[in-house]
Every structure is written in structure tokens, then in C-alpha cells.
Length: 76
Image (cartoon, rainbow, N blue to C red; front, top):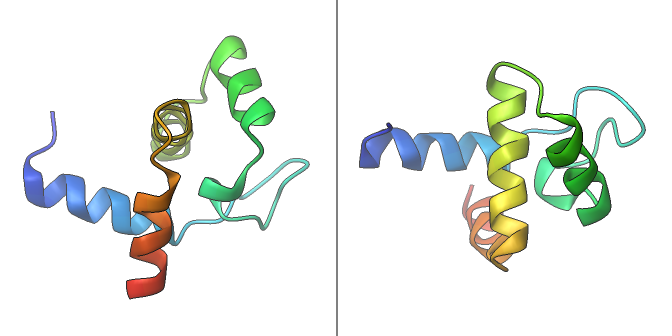
């Protein structure tokens, strides 16, 4: 489990990370279409940091919290 500082750092990194491969390569992770993130959720997220980010994007989208990451993008 991440502490508060680690969580903030993770969200800042997520806000500034682009999808590194696939159909949506070069698109900010938070801007991935919901159906694509749901597809990953059903298929299984990849291992590692990209998988952690995709899982977080899924949770943010399901809970309507994308604006949180967009606010971070504007601030950085």
C-alpha cells in the first residue's frame, strides 16, 4: 500500500504518462476510451507500472474522477 506522498507522486506520474503501445499509443492514459480500459480490465492488466496505471485509470473512470487527473495535468 502506498503512503500519501507515494500516492501523490503516482498520480502526478499517471497524469503525465502516455500510453506506450497499442491502438492508443501516444494518448494520455487518462484520455484512453473507457471501453478500452474496460477491455483491459476483463482481459487482465499487464504486470508492472503500466498495468498499475491502467487499473487506476479504470477505477478513476468508473467513479467519475477523471477530472482529478486533468487538474493535476493543468498544474504541472
